[in-house]
Structures are given as C-alpha cells and as structure tokens.
Length: 280
Length: 350
Image (cartoon, rainbow over all chains, first blue to last red; front, side):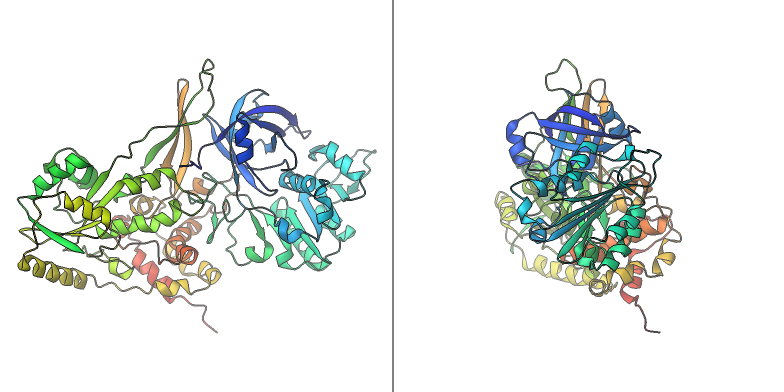
C-alpha cells in the first residue's frame, strides 16, 4: 500500500539567497530516484511538505513550474525550527519532499481567459510557478493577456529579480513591479502599495480572472479594488496558508469550517471563502 | 444474523481458543478502571465493566506511533532518508468492545480510508481486526448513543455481537469475518429459547434506559456561518479550561501531530494524538493563530463533531454518545446540552 506520509528522498542541488535581508532562500531539489520525479506530477498552485529528518516537515508552495524538468524549487522564509535548519543546509545534502499536495489554480477554467496575477512579498512562489507555466511556448497561446502586479517593501525584498527583469523585457506579459518605497535613484519601476498600483494600472476584468496571494493586509485592501474593476467573487482566486502536519486532509488541524486547506485548498475562490467561517 | 450460545463457564475456554487463532485485545481491569489491552491469558479479560475510561481508539490510532525511522549517522549511506518500519498486522480480535466505540471506528473511516488517500496503518489494522462487541445491558446515566444514530444493542458496525444473558452469552455473527470466528468454536451450541428471550428483554430495557433525545439532524440543515457566529458559543466556552480531556477520551477524535525525535544519531518520525483545545494546534510559523482564543477552539470542537462532519460526509454526527466527555469534563461541559443549543439556535427574525 502506498504510504502518503513517506517523503521522496531528494538532494539539494543549489541554494540561492533571494532577498537582501537573507530571510528567503530558494532551494533547487533533485530526486535521488528518477522514478520519483515521474510520480511527483504537479500543477502550479500546489504545495509539498519539505522534510528534514530529525527536524520535521513544513508545507511550502511549489515555486518551480512543471514545464521545468529535472528539479523542483521551493522558496523558504526563515521562521521556525525546520526553516532555520534548512537555511543552514548546503548543496549536496539529503532531505525529503512529500507531495504534490492540495488543489491548484483552475487552469482548465483559465484557458482562453485574461489572467491578472497580484502578489505581495514572499507570497509570490506559486505565482512564479504559474507565470513560468503560462509563458511556456507550449502554453502561452492557451491564455489571453497576462498582467502581473508584484510588490515588496523594498527592491531588495523582491523575489526572482533576474526573472522579473526578463519578464519586463517581454511583450507577451505586462509586468507592474512595485515597492512600498525606495531611495534607489535608479529604480525604474513603480513606487506604491499593491492595491494602489492595481487601481492605477486597472487591468480589465473583461474575460479575466485574478489570482491574488500576499499578506492579509494587502489582500484586504486589494479585494475592493478588484471588485471596483469588475471582478466578481467567483473570478478572484486566492491561496491560503495554515499550520499543517499531514497535508492530506487527515490530521485535522487546518480546517476552515468544512474545508481542509491542505486537501480542499489551498486555492479557493473569494466566492467559496465567503461561505466559510472567517477563521484563517 | 446466525446466533450461537455458550455458557459463562465455557467463556474462558472460548477466549483460550481465540488466543490460539488471533492476537486478542480485551477489557482488562487495571486496578482503578478498565482499559483495552492485549491479553495473553483468558482470565485477564473482564467483561464486568460498563465502559472503559479511555476509548479503544488507541488500538487503531495509538497515542504515539512510530511512523518512520531514519539515521543521521554521517557514515550511513542512507543518512537523512526517512524509511518505513515493520508493524504487526496479523489477525486480531477486539473482544468486548461496546457498540458505540465500534461505531466510532466506522465514523473515523471516512477520514483515514478515502478513495484517493489511505492511511496505511489505520487501513491495515482495520482489515486485520475482528470486532467482537458486547451489548450494553445497563447503559450509564451519561450514555446517549441512541440519540446519535447508534444504540446499546446496535450490532451494525461489529463482526460479532455478544449479549450477556446471565448464565451465558448469545453470540451473533454480523459479518462474514464474524462468522469465521464463531465457526471455529466447538463450545458453541444453538441458542436456548430462554436465552433468546432474555436477550430480547435486555435489549428492550437497555434501550428504554436511554432517554436522551437530540435533534442533531436539524443542525445539518442550518447555515454554517449563522451557527458559527451564534452567541451560544460565549455561554458554552465560559467554563472551559482547554484541558483537552474530552478530545483524548473521545473515540471519534482523530487529530494528530507529527514530530521527529532523535537520540544519538538515530531518529523516528512519530505521530501523537493532538487536540484542537490547544493553541499550538493551529499556531502558524509567523506567529499568527487563527484559533488563538478559547472560544474559537471550543467552537471548533463542537462544530466539527456536530456540524462540519455532518455537512462534509453526510453520515450523521461525529459522536457516538459514549458520554466519556460528559463524565470526565472537569467543568461539566455537556455535549448533550451543546447539541440542544445548536439545534434550537436560530437567527430569529426581529
């Protein structure tokens, strides 16, 4: 019987420090057994449990896209026991990955639609996965216009800076990068909070869906902007975080009302969330 | 249901027979109360109990269970790789389980054994186990099984049902597995008419002894948010001290934690019972806690049992009426009363 709690062994291939505060690192992981990579079939929006023997497991969104082969990537914020240890691990060391877990952004529904991606801070990981996925030559024609509003407090806190610059240079994706503030005279993008920039850039709600991930305060102030732009609640999609253990809907701690964030989520429409208790 | 009979004197011999064919777990008097544990000799089994203080959920979902093993020895080529451990899934019998506790396993199956995801330890133990239940001739004052979809003589989730008729036991096979268990017992003979009559009388009197009536079905029809936001939770949570006793005693509480333990350079990944009564249960790494307040945690417990479970699985409530939480709550919070408040609450038109 397949044991859903058993992690696949992986090797850390590289570690990249993403932000100037050095609190976020991206881990590129390679499966020890090539057949495990085949079994680990994921879709952008899903997450996995990263396992460090002796420390435990943590649920982290998958930052790579299934169109990128040979590895998986996770960007991890340093907050607790496992993540602190992980931040000290080196390429070549062995750890584990369990998943993929949870649901995903509704790609079948998004097909043929314009997609507005709104991200804040380090909640940009599964959004990166989504952008890479949509920009893949095999997929780009399946989607309409792509708008991305991505903000961080300072330029140094933005994730994936090289990729952001590369996407800026493309004409098949409209990037709206912003920071809350900066004293960098060479900063050439926007300055302002995500809600304000979203309002200013006003991506059309016509035939469009919005995917929004970020700190609660950003989401709180961006939702009214999206509503004003004409996005109905069933076309606003978000991904939630919750303390998790099993990640497969069994251990009982991540529920919001009847829904387990790990199994029935983490992706929910605003319409669905409005039917659930405000306990997240 | 094919039924057989054996006398009280024959019972130890029957247990001995079972010990030859299965691992046998039964109620054992531990000096202060009864507890389900593995028995090696027939006389360890004591069926003279009302119910055990702890439910037998431990036998399927141990309070602490080794999930995996790993080595952190730098010289071990597999260092850091988490591996499965051997477990005993040989056939076993749980003897003397009460119908309510057996029903609890059925209620928990929807969590551990789904179409897509199967908890391997739960599923294998369930498959390896034959449940030999003991009907409740004398329910406790805190019992309310028949108000939540089971009953003192409910054999529906058992493999064999025993009824203690005084001078012997009437044993009925409920499932094929139960039939196989009884088929191997040559003590068994056909049920004397008197014993059959006695069993009927006992059933009626036991059922009559449980007078609690709850309208838990009506909770399913209520709006989740209205019930969630109802002021009744203020009243329910007032005395609660978040000790978690209710969740540890409850046969349907399945929540668990996963922790790694290391000694020297060898370690285990273990799972441990956890409780929604504790703030740590939902504490995020960031420090945010969606259930930081006592009211939220108390509400979660009752909403899960009586509302969320019903709405999610459509199989009644996640409560079997064993009454343990009522009996052992240090501040007398009574789930029967909470169920009443939930079923009568309404967003009354002004």
